[in-house]
Image: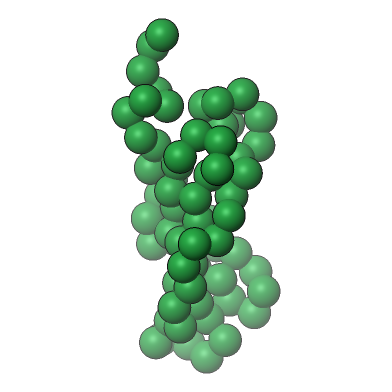
Length: 67
């Protein structure tokens, strides 16, 4: 889904990283969009991101309300 702020790409910034216990070189990563406030929790494995693997992107109500 496009960024609710400007319908462009999300400006995802990593805000947390924790080793994933099931595989070496895997991490659970929390990312936050600096534009609309959306949050997603991914699995990163060998430098590749599996988007929304743990938690699909969640949007704050203000980003989805009709104005």
